[in-house]
Length: 266
Ligand code: THG
Image 1 (tube, rainbow, N blue to C red):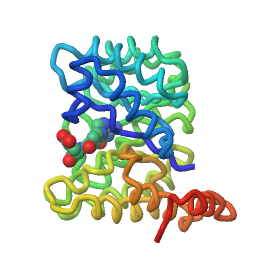
Image 2 (cartoon, rainbow, N blue to C red):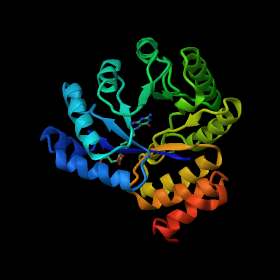
Image 3 (cartoon, protein in one colour):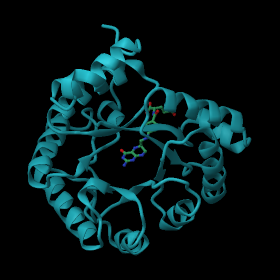
Image 4 (spheres, protein in one colour):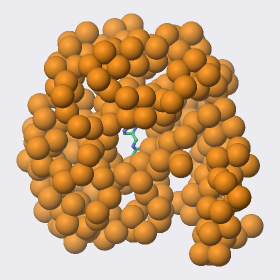
């Protein structure tokens, strides 16, 4: 099953930031209900944009979001203290976003994760920064999976994020991501692969068509989750269709169900 991480509860988005600042629960509840109805698997919650307010904003958001949905949450913060607090407030096994191989953060996140009942997004980032090649991504994925397995994580609970970088920055970025995904899927069977889909189109016009095209190509290489906007009907239709064509949808049942529900109209 493709895992859709609904990205819309993020204080970098101006409307969400305003709703959080005003403690406008109605706006948040409405958005979360829409993401749930549209087929999100997790609701990502990121309260990082209002400097100095992350802890209070996260606390408030977790209560409001969980009043609106039964879906599990994806807790999105680089700060282990915020994640510790958030872990204590969720009703369902969460997806922790994220761990990476960066020095200090790696050690504190490993301490944080030991013994917790959660799934985890692992970023292919280390002290030298963003990955520059397929080998960089695959090597970091291997280290992350080995370290997480050492502390008891099962592969089904690990989501590798290869760190999708914009085409506008380097025309090789799409190909690097696709080849890295294919290699990770064959070398580390059982792990999931996710990433921020819209990173690919940053800085270019007509971003949505780039995102759609890229999602289909990534699914062809084994991508089985994305951080994306589930209210974008075209991208959701694309996801269901590409996942079926890839062979992940027995008897095309999910595809046919989505067509019958009016979710796919070609
Ligand atoms: N990997 C992981 N986590 C992530 C990211 C990633 N979390 C945050 C981010 N990247 C994914 N979340 C979002 C949320 C909203 C938007 C994009 C990514 C978004 N952006 C619009 C844009 O870029 O044009 C609108 C911005 C605005 O309105 O201000 O909607 O890569 N593990």
